[in-house]
Image (cartoon, rainbow, N blue to C red; front, side, top):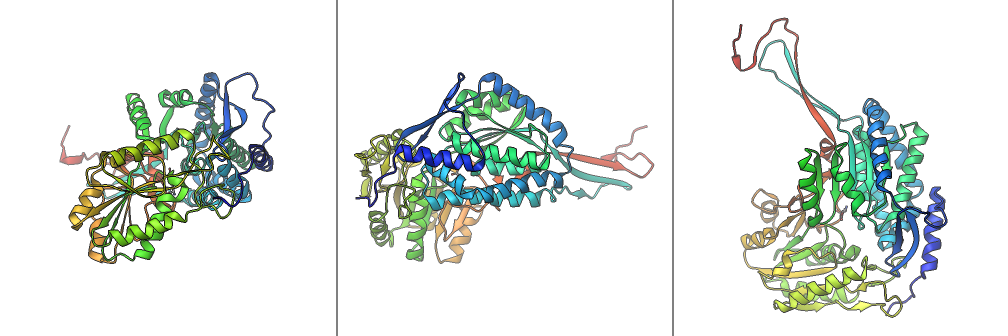
Length: 513
Ligand code: UN1
């Protein structure tokens, strides 16, 4: 039983309007004549208000504006471009609480996770401001006397950003802060499920652009459905399509962009595993596992979905997890006591139930959770207890990503078996090992260990810092965004050979004339 009732949809409408007002955005009453997107809240599962969406003609204009602005932006010195990102970071700091409110209203995240998502935006702005003075190219020792060989990095063009509901603003900011510092302009197609937070972010970037005098068109927002996203995918003026979402989406986007020789940066499904070795600190492991598996109601691409536990510790580990799962407070994400908010939709809950049913049909056993909550108060919302399911190796449903809090528990005997089990899924985003055996930890991080883009020791699979590159291998799509040298995907390199010798000498010792 939940201690407090849910807020009403009217409360949430007021909350959303107040947050939008505070960032300086007044939505028109009613949606007007054109296409419409309905802002909703998973907290009650009901519609908030209609928001105007982009027509194909408006989408075309947005790309044209960004394409035009690119000509001015690419020649703006990078540290001056950094000023725009710095100003955006200041506005995000000022409106941290308002933006977090919108994330909670539209995505259902609990308060600390919603604030954490906004924190990620502020952090990447800081990172990108620094980056604006560090877009380094290398010089290379030439094989010829009197020659200089160098690598120069130039802005790429318009970046199309397609983002998902579960990180409705951070993923935009990773792409946008870095792209703007790199001299690109951005057209953003957010999830249809989160138009309000998108409008708020875009408005703050408009304000930042006006404050620092950046060219109009340095960014554009396109609210709309899949068809609007497809316009970005197929538009030759969009140099890079950075898309976050399902593997199914990536399978469509990748070849379509490749067919016009555009570039893609794909962040697709994860099916993240954690190995728990016999030497693991089980208290630490339980905390790390519960956050990674049940946090964000299992709706992160980095969510822990597969626990690979050594046979000697699987029973005590499962006993502790079962106890922890039984106590997880599920409910209103605005309530400070809640740890698990709603799933995004009743359809997501149906998919979760189908996956659990399939696991059972394959011999799996539900150890904890799985019950629906608050259906009487909010029949259109999807509150569910995170579920723990023990399965045998080879259970087919374990190979699929179900975007819900299901943790499958598998057992291993030898370390080699653990790594093989771990890598035996089509996805390759995040991974971790809980162990106090240093050799084992290093092996897990080595070339013969985890095959993922993220591999951790004694910490769960989710909650990466922005300073590292973020992304994964195999069906996760291979893209890297955020920190480290992910910026290179947003620029093009040119190799320069400069002959200052006054004589022509050919490479590879070729003689001619
Ligand atoms: C996502 O779920 O799309 O590592 C991104 C994490 C977050 C980002 C997740 N920093 O869990």
